[in-house]
Length: 213
Ligand code: S3P
Image 1: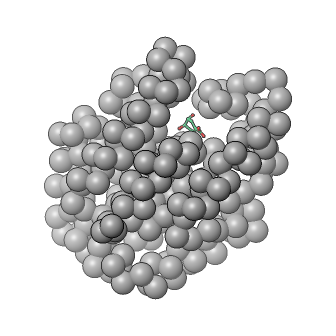
Image 2: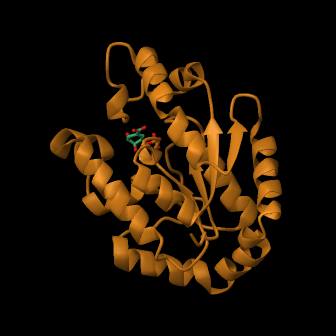
């Protein structure tokens, strides 16, 4: 399987994918895309609305379809993907095809504390969110781990350490050497690449835009 030159951030809801993606995009001068946002823009409604109106299965189909489309994008990017994306085996293959997969691992308690009061995660709108987080995390653990090139301890490392570790791993994977990818993205890629994405997805997200995790 040929691997793309993207960086793909995976991990449970609230693991910090969005924040890491954003910081990394500044450091590498690469565009960052959040797959939930791409789906929301294409759908013209929020993830919660998609779940409520068409159900989780439909949302999962959209995730797979989107990953297939992202594979056709010729320029290297950072992708932050939904917490449930790696659960489908097909998606795990697509994620690995996209590029280097970085798994941000955090404890259920961290997620619970970060997302207390959040109403945008349909799967956590229940009586016992901490119990649900524990359950889902356990169910997904193997999927996350089997998909990852790099596993980072999101509880034990601060942002700078996480970024440094990702940079080191990139340096260890010549096919993903970011000097080259960032240059390409800067020269023409981010503009042409993003506009192509707009053609495909009817959406646009640049590095630096605020997004959620
Ligand atoms: C989900 C995670 C969410 C979003 C949806 C389902 C999940 O993304 O895709 O609510 O199944 O874990 P974040 O991980 O960005 O919160």
